[in-house]
Image (cartoon, rainbow, N blue to C red; front, side):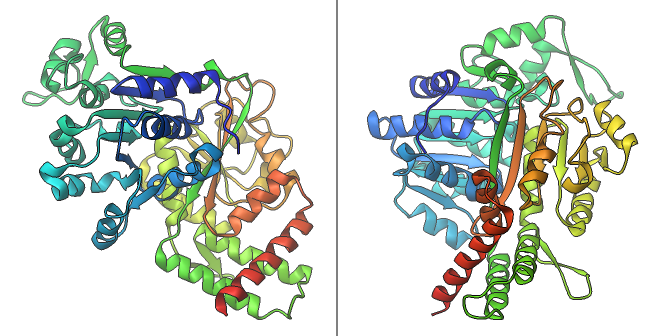
Length: 459
């Protein structure tokens, strides 16, 4: 695709190029990834200002998002990206691979700093979801602080820099400026801008901002941070699509290929019936989601890769409500189990009472099957994020489901997030939906292509 940036995207990329340290506090869906890659490309190949770039991201984002985004745009496809993930042996092999950009899971930051010690090789670092560095007592913050002086350029990306209040800002801004704006220690920051709130005789549990603190802090960090909300830069109501790549682990990928190959081998040479196509796609889509029904309709769990990716998307939304579409009942059950420990207000859509509660803001996560609420429901007052956990071949069902939020009365851009397993049937479904082709024809063509690929691989 040809990249034609919006003016705000051009501005943000220019800030990354011009400033040694900058925080881009942009709403989810405004294109933080492509903005950053565009700026890295300029710094690396137009200005020769950086040599090795490190991107620190949540696990599922590190596995697929950055590589996928670079491959999407023509002017970025030459960027060499190495994913520093997996076992220590795999991580070391990835670090030894020549590349422009190295992407690592944020949980391995301390390991990376300890591995290189004084020989830190990255002159530019990008913190994807910098809010995960908000705790100044965390290992990842302390590790990055040790090598901060060896980092020439630092970029922070997040849509929610202060989800729990202004207290979250100090650690993130400290990594940008070394304490020049908000104080060199968290204690100084608290003393200057906050008063104790909830406390016991010996311990302070929370702080409340002093009068005028918000305005002063905003002014103090205004030159080093860019803050934008989607509604300020997009025509309302707009609809944007965010493909979230999901990478299966080795065990799940092997199971997928085995299921795909075995079912295909049961078919006659070159012949696909509608019934066989339905069975095949259904099982492959189930496995993409993480479980498969056996012959007795019992769900057999295979992996949690997509559930983990969903939880990371939910974390990035940071309290914004989302409507989640699932495909199979075992999807719903596994999502409910994963959400239970989080303390969120979760409900499965059943009737008008759920519609009213959602629009009243009383539900954080509303799970729904697209067939159950794809028509007639007005859900636009309860949120503007849709997550497709399980995809559907039905173009009509897909578009109608998205229209539950993207309709008159919606005050924000609607952002539709697709969880897409890389190399799986999910990719074929997305391609079919975007091509707006006939459901059955697309299904058949996808299966023919997969049969050919599977047999060529087996030879």
